[in-house]
Length: 78
Image (tube, rainbow, N blue to C red):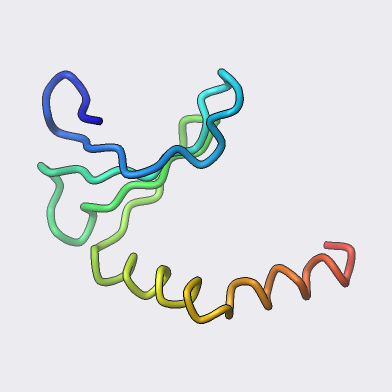
């Protein structure tokens, strides 16, 4: 999905089961390369990163390292 200017393309909605302004993963086509990937939260904050940085995040998820980190957090009650 793109916004009305064509600047942003939505890659994913990270909740989507409510109307609270769910976190989203977007591409900002007009941003400098170091800030092209955008993650928004439901409070209007944004994190921007390069495609290379996002690729590292994706690789960490695919490898299971993020699952392990989440399991450790759950086990410690955090």
